[in-house]
Image 1 (cartoon, helix red, strand yellow):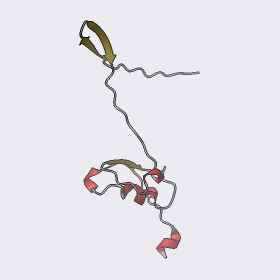
Image 2: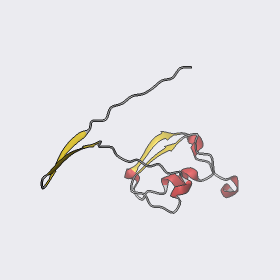
Image 3: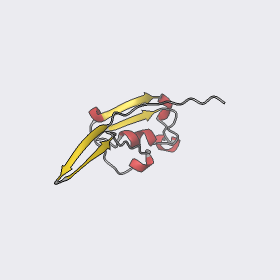
Image 4: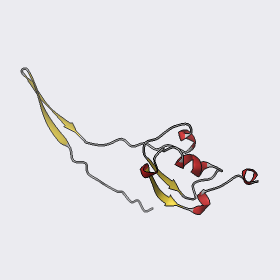
Length: 95
């Protein structure tokens, strides 16, 4: 069995606290939270910035439209991957 381990190191920040006669040290790691939402979870929301991947993971009619229509400003949409097959339309709507 091949096991590949990706290691990375975070730079820590050591802080010295002083309060009256007490002194202590704390160690903090500066990390940032990130979040991901599915297209269905974003229905009805307005999002300020959208990184979206329009690839073969889009599986239902109207998902690409729903994903792109969540942001009111085209300049704040970042398309990471684009596949023509992502734009699925219901045949009954085309008639």
